[in-house]
Length: 151
Image (cartoon, rainbow, N blue to C red):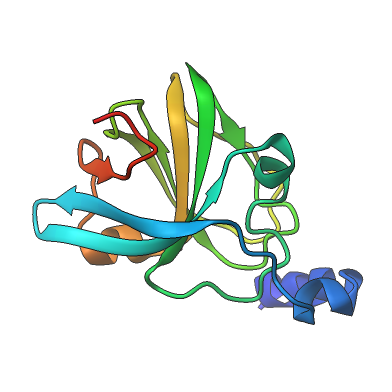
C-alpha cells in the first residue's frame, strides 16, 4: 500500500502537461531479438543524441508491449541508468556492439533514482516494458538485430 501511495504522491508532483501532453517520438524502426523461443519483434524509437538519451522514456504514461527505445552510443563504455521521472516499469537490456545482450535489469521501478549499471562496457541500451523480457524468454546472450548495431 505504501508503494502505491508513494507513486500517487510522486505523480501529483509531476506537472499534468508532462504526463498527458503529446509524447515525443524519435525515428522508429523494427528491432528483432533472437531468443531460444524464436524472434521477438519490437517497434522502437532510436535515441542517438545526448538530449534524447537524457529524456528517454520519461513522463510517458504507457508503452505498448511491443515497443521500446534503443539508446545508441558511439563507443563501448559502462553506462548507468535511473528511473527518475519514468512513470512505467521497464526492463533495461545492456547490449554489446555486436548486439549481444550483456545484462538485463528486469522490472526497474518507476520514479526510482537508484542507479542501474551495465556492469561492463556496452554500446547500446534497450528499454522495453517491465516484465516483457521474461514473458518473451529474452536472456543474456540473446542477440539484437537492428541496422544501427554491428552485424
